[in-house]
Length: 307
Image 1: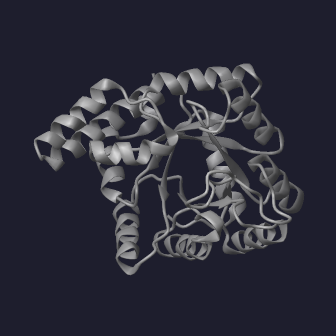
Image 2 (image 1 turned 135 degrees about the vertical axis):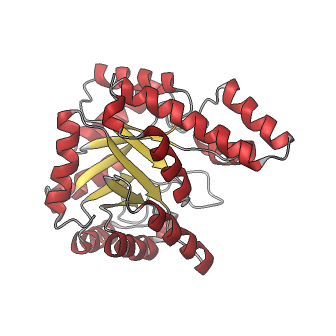
């Protein structure tokens, strides 16, 4: 699974979307310690033979993991052959620093960039641009296009249940449309657990003229505690059926049952999403390759799920 160039990787992904063939991608986060590195590499090894179109790798606030994003992105590309889409956030970075990071991404052969504003550093509630920095993800998209042309596919985030800081869904969609108008190629959504939220979001996005692929982001959860922890920021609606299944497993002290409930729900979501025409699925796997392996074994060929 080795890819020769940025342009070939971008063309392969774009061709799938253009022909209605669903893509399958996963998200890693860079390791902080040796034990985390082992888990990341075990996860990448566990899924290296799956039909994964690309892998994203996250980026810490204020550049707290920027070197690790680059290092582990290169590592899993070199060892396992993944197409890599690193994240990039504005937090703590001047324009010059952002351009320097992007140039390093280009030299590393990363085919795409997920352009994000980023969350405020821990302990802070408001986003404040760095000196000579940028304030919005749309400005980062423009910076990439102005300085790197078409060297990267550019992804941006979308929020089916609106960004927590947005005053309303309409304002949030205007921000998303601006990111697309400035050159974003596709949207990956924040995690959600109710497919109707995604379908409504796509319908509203199309109504305001957003035409790029909107890839649903899915997270298989292990337990009610994990669900509540990861959902604290996104505040996604959790259907009662999922919450009760996880609650029952937690109360019984049955971790395996909790994991099965989370995987069952993710499988159900993915089947319905792909059947209804979603352009693919992006899995937030939390550096656990077993999630992706189990789901792939259950789902088989995503294209065969089309209604």
